[in-house]
Image (cartoon, rainbow, N blue to C red; front, side, top):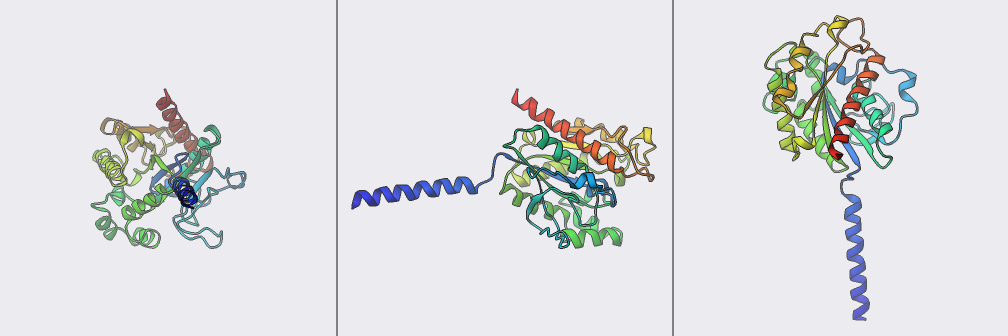
Length: 285
């Protein structure tokens, strides 16, 4: 009888051990935090039929808001059919970033994105020390966006969402597309550095394992309204050694020369993805 009890106890312990391994974060689920302003939020009307079909279920998005018309529930992972942010938004670079990765990575790897973006915001919107005061002194439309979708605090929302995501997988990188509202500000790279380092510290991450991929705004060759900011953005790797700049050259833009067209978002997303694949390949060497 005692022998039977010992065997049963050992079996129960083994089952608990296996259960804990299954329930923990999946190392093959690669998660990326995506932050920025309107181009990362997704310009409305840029989603076309081609963007909504044949989305690989290995590419997932952590739903940041409820979209009842689509059956999407805040706080749940779902296949990354756009829009990836608010219910009314369009394509973002994150769309084709994720698709590029799942197309090229081994089938056992899944890719997830957590997208927190606010049209028209400055980088201060994601600074843990200034986000509240920044939003409080911003235009009503920006305040409404942040209050309605992110509980009035983008930093806190992003951190909470990231920590929830970490229960499912491993954060592998941060994507940034922001700068139009800080256009040509020489202080911007150091402000981004603070946001990046604060995120790493809060989430227990190491810079060498979590690169920052920052995309250019609409290019000078396409008469980009804020193209001068790309010169500032080019200096980002000087202050953040693990930062990479993603070119926007020849990515089709909209008539406002601020936002990308559908084809522009697709191409920019591919470039983000190609850069991340290059980083992952280098790490294996």
